[in-house]
Structures are given as C-alpha cells and as structure tokens.
Length: 472
Image (cartoon, rainbow, N blue to C red):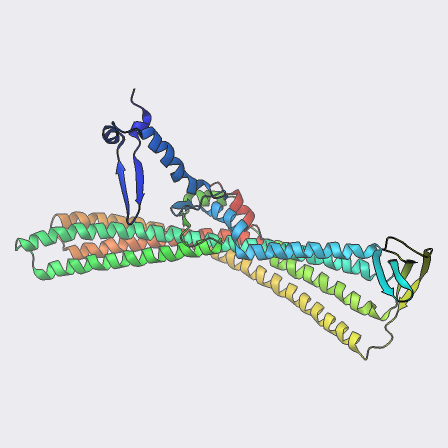
C-alpha cells in the first residue's frame, strides 16, 4: 500500500539572499529523493509542525487567522473580552466593589502600631513602641449611609456595564446587517458584470466582423466599465464595514472577516416576539441607571445634612518604652503607659460652606428626578413609534416582495425578446437594473422589519442576552 504521506504536498521556503517558495508532489519528490537519506516522511514531520505552530499559539477561543470567518455570536464573545468600552465598564465596576469594601471597614476598629528609637548623650539609646485602637461610637449614621451609597454606586456601575454590552450588541448587529446587504449587493453586481462582459464579447466580435457599429461597441463598453466601478465601490464599503466590526470588538482590521446573517433563520428566532406586543421600557438600563442615580444623590444629601451634628470616637492607646530597647543590652526596666477616652468633634460654624453643599446636593437630586422622567418619556415614545411603524413596514415588505417577483418576470420576458432580436440590448440593461433594484428594496424592507423587533429587545435591555441565545 502506498504511504498516505506520499500524497501530501509539502511547501518548502528557502531563506538566504532571496526568498523563494515551491511545492513538489509526493510521487515526484520520492523519485527525486530516492538516493537521499532525507525522506518525505522526515520533511513532513519537520515542516508540518512549523506550519501548525503559528495557528495554535493564540489563546483565543476564536482563531485570529486573517481569513477566518466571524459570525455575530463569535463577534460578541470577542467583544466581551477585548472591546475597549466593555473593559472600561468592567474596570469601573471592580473599582466600585473595592469602594464598598472600604466603606464596610468603617464599622470595625482602626488599629495602629508604631515604633521610635533615638540615641543621645548622656542618656544613651532609648526606644518606644506605641499601639492605638480607635472605634467610632456615634457618627449620626454616616458609616451606614456611606456603605449604602457605595452599594448603590456598585449597582450603578453594574447597570452601566449592562448598558455598554447592550450598546456593543446593537452596534454589532447593525454592522452585520450592513454586511449582509453589502454581500447581497456584491452578488447582484457580480451577476450584472458577468452579463455585460458576455454581451461585450459578443458585440466586440460582431464589430470586428463589421456587423456592429463602433457606437454600439462603445455604449456596451461604457456599461461594462460602469458595472466594474460600481462593484469596486461596493467592495470598498465591504472592507470599511469589516474594519468597523473589528474595531468595535477590539481587534486589528485584518484579523477576522464577518459572515453575512441568515435572515430567514434570524426571522424564525424573532417569531416569538410579535411587533405589536407591549414593550416594557422600565427594564431599560438607562432608566434603571437614572433611578439608582437618584437614590445615590438622596444618600449623599443625607450625609451633607448630618455634618452639623457631632461625631464621637472611642480611642485607646498604649506605650511601651525602655532605655536600650532595640539593642542587645537593655539597661532600665521597661515602662508601660496607656490611656483611653472619648473624642468628640463638632462643626459649629463654617461660614455657610455646609449650607452651600446641601443646596448643590438638592439640585443634583432634582436633576436626577428630571432625568428619570425624561428617560421614561423617551423610551415610551420609542416603543410607541415602533408599534406604529411595525404594520407599515410589514406592508412595505409584502409590496416589495410582489414588485421583485414582477420585475423578475419582466426581465425573463425581455431577455427572451432580446435573444430573438426583437429589442435592443440597452432596453434589457434597464430591465436588469430594475430587477436588481427591486431585489435590493425587498432586502432592505426585510432588514427594517427585523430591526423593529431588534429595537424592542434594545429598549428592554435584552438584546445582548437575545443574541447569545440565537441559534445561528
């Protein structure tokens, strides 16, 4: 039996003053290397690991090879790890959690330990060890309020992380819908270009035989060049859209190539959400953030109002001293001193500074309340707009589908007339473009219908979760 490795084609790179690449089939290589001690098995054993090594060095769950395909869910997973906006939001959430831990420590005593050593003449060397414990006894409930404020801020940062995820998810799905439309445009324009190329070859051949005029050849050539230019422009948009997706998920522009969405499958995933159903804006992260912000401002106002009241701390300290301490030969017997007491501080008068801070806090609280009202009003208006648009967009989608079917039939009829020589080619070109335009309008109507459903998930703050659950 022939060794399976003999069928492997191995690529070998030569490095020196110049670089070259060549590939040799297994059978031919076996004949060339018959008198050599280096066999094909050794070449592949050495070469294949070198080829595989760069591909397995990445630790990502999704490979970053320049030609890898990227779907919507994979893009969201990569964005969760690399997107700058999500990294910032996670950092702020972690910082808020540490602040909460700091506020929790205020309920426990503070313990300090210090030491002092000096040397002088004629007393000699002496040392002192000092320890102190301080415990807040009464602070008008400030410690509890500060802890509640820190917990509220932690919830705010968690909602901001949720909001950042929702924003990334919305931007990504919009970009992938654009990718789908661009890919569809490239497919149509490629078909048109191939039609023009075939016709140009026919007209050019007839022109060389003297059966067509130079004007007819020139007009077909102009149509061909226009189709090429249009296709190149659409490919440029595709490159730009790909770079935007990679930028959004935090990867370099050449890393990953997005895959167009399967609109039929996406529509099936959205069937459980009827366009006319009641949307619940109260779940929106913007609304929840504004509510939590108002709670935070109210707690801050309480802290400022309590600044007029005294604060009481229990303090205890002990001191251990001895001449010659920290040396090998202590001289005197040690001395131990301790003291305990209550420390009271009371801000009697600050020339209106506290009153000014209270007034500012009241205004911030009022602004937070106004923000809540503005957010809920905006969300309700968006939801109502979606309900009104939904039925209209479905009607447009059905009409565009009917128009597209009619244009396809028209083109088929005109194409048969052209083949029979009953109409000029430029009339067929017009029909070809009408058919392409109808297909594009039908696709855009479908995309807009999907976007209405997607917008509903976005209003409720469930878009990120929904994309993760998609069966793509």
